[in-house]
Image (cartoon, rainbow, N blue to C red; front, top):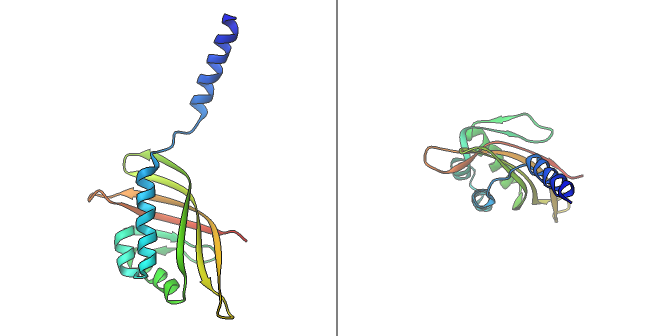
Length: 149
């Protein structure tokens, strides 16, 4: 009986050590909510200043890297001007390798216009690195996504 208990305890310890430790999702959910609100407002400059670090990078699918807050503002403004709207984010996992860094694995859905004038939802997955800046605000430093097709 003792041998069974020791084996079970040893297995539990090994499994616990192998399980990734995820950050408290509250801060990530708040950061995501800020991005959804900025996206809904459709103001590229304000959204970029509030949500992205000064030296942030976007890695959009099938397109060149977009670097810096000003270029990111222009990128998103182009999307909003074209009719992209209704961003909805989902959270799969959050890893927190340090006090000032969170790595988000998530999902996204947006509404886009079609050629016939109607709209459709498109969705995908994202990997985002968030940095907590000196003002205590979490901002995106790297944002990479792909579409589900």
